[in-house]
Amino acid sequence: MIQKAAEILESSKSLFVLTGAGISAESGIPTFRGTDGLWKNYSATDLATPEAFEKNPELVWEWYHWRQGIILKAEPNPAHFAVAELEKKFNNFLLLTQNVDNLHRRAGSKKVLELHGNIFRARCLSCGRIVHHQIEPGKEINNLPKCDCEGLLRPDIVWFGEQIPQDIWQASLEFLSAADTSIICGTSGIVWPAAAIPEMAKKNRAKIIEINLEPTPISSIVDVSILGKAGEILPLIIQTLNTNI
Image 1 (tube, helix red, strand yellow):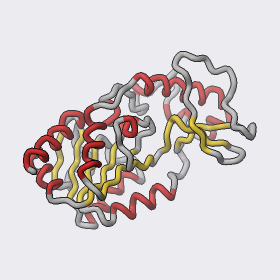
Image 2 (cartoon, rainbow, N blue to C red; image 1 turned 90 degrees about the vertical axis):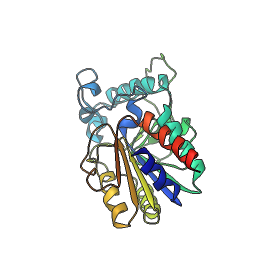
Image 3 (cartoon, rainbow, N blue to C red; image 1 turned 120 degrees about the vertical axis):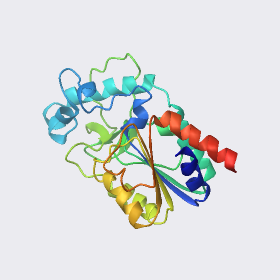
């Protein structure tokens, strides 16, 4: 399967990559779905909503600052670096990630679109300005983050019940329509609208390579499905690709 994936990439001219929580889980970042995502007996669905922020912004910011602390201690893993390496091999390349942890950029990826936002950005509820917002590890936050205009800042994250950024989604679909190969990595294939991407790629007659720990709803339609850790499989694909060239 590794060889077949490398052969597909070898004959490709444009590459679209979609990544999900699975790729960052290998860096020790909880998925925030299920029991590993509980914090003070709250789940992500309790906190990552506009209603939760309106009711208790202090609690929601405390959770996001806690998450930032976890992410700041983590490092990009071999899968992140492999995706960055693939970008160097293709003039026509786009990475769409469902992750908000910034690890792809830290690994060197540049052509990145973030479908669900970035945990190190905040957006002003008054003027709409987007700013970098990162806590110092171990520092206690006593006041709610405010914009220069004195408006309240919220995490620049797509919360449950909110629409994804339409400009990012449209840019992704535009690239996908012309891409001849797609890699779907570390995603369950059930979170919409990203779950629609494999079907769209198939409709456009693109080759699809799936990498995941277990089979997903899209496994039956892809050209190559490789079960295992992305941090092991992606470097092997690149190694094989380099050998074939």
